[in-house]
Image (cartoon, rainbow, N blue to C red; front, side, top):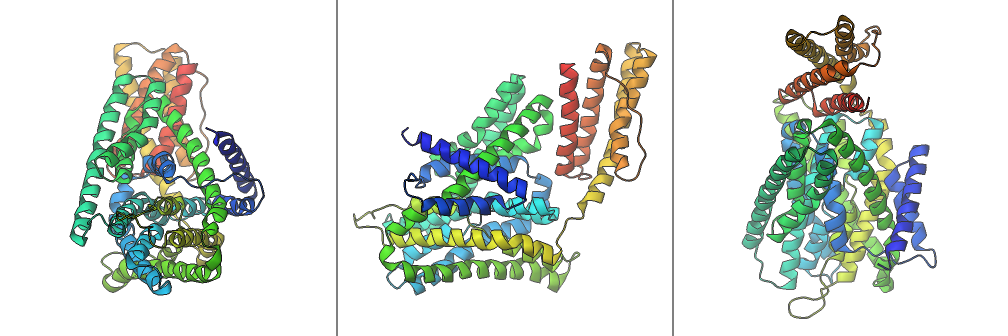
Length: 523
């Protein structure tokens, strides 16, 4: 409780720096990390040492859940191979190669401790990369692969980390036991995540109260994580699966819930991301205290390990994602520039530091964990180096390679087609209602114009002229327009389910429908 005021000050400063970075068009993670590094040298700044339990329980689950809510399950399925390759294969290979290099560069470090270090620095944190990608307009495929990788790779790395730590500590882990533990953790996480998502979806539908539904949603990431971890399953996978499940079914929730959830999770993301990137920079003083006598040699080792993780990712992306397409070309090969951007988006994040801080002090025999201070420093060095290297150069790489998304026109055309069909469905619904209850001519004309408004607005992006809009409706208009909006929503969801529009298009249109729906209720 005594640290609460210091935490509030840190959050306020971090949000202020985030606002300045956005105003000046700078990379927010880079600005926050550099500011944290500068503050770590200021006398009197409180000790903001990372508490691994707080990060893994209070910070990681909501960040993963929010990202999963807005991820496209269609995109996940379409890009399952590259996502699995990076989130599983790349993480395990990076763990092994980095561990072997650390073992070779630091003779005093046992192989087990070196593999722990490899697992700690193996998973990239794509938060910074995706924020840069959105700002610069990366292609949707690249964004889907990066975000999908970041949702799953932490589970792979943390499981490998636990196996490596258990081996060093001496709790009897073997390679076969480690593989079994990994499979059980992954399977358990999938089951728990699906169960939590299924249960929460049905509870929220039964509540019929927007505030309570949103409040229940706030508990999901923590409940899924803790339930899974309680049975030795992967809490990370549980959170991701629950988020994907509920995100896919968000169209069935009420408009007010979707609007509230959107605002809440955008705000939470901004707050937590500002906090974690600030904390990374502030760790400098803490991690150097235990290795001050060998700082020079460890910096050289850190440079070698940074080069290793960067090179391993680049080689892995080329061998597993680019080379097969070049050799077989079973479908149109992706531009090599896409692979270059993906390979260069390998920034490490706060999960690596939290895992390093969670390394036990003692082994089962009561002896100190070998080279713990060195592992902690090297994990910090690689995390910081990759953030600064990739964060500073990724925008330049994207611009030089000319990797820009081409989905704007395609999305506009798909949205216009869906909007046209939605307008037809809305008018058809109005005609059905008019057969039961007479509708005044003025109201009917106004409703027909309202049904065409969204369709016309979508076609305008393709060169259509403006269309006339009606005035605010009467009570009859509110009732009938609500029915028409429901019919439009069903068509957009059907188009998404049939793969004719992307989830991103659906979310944008639903947001417009939801805003109108809420305004109808408030008039």
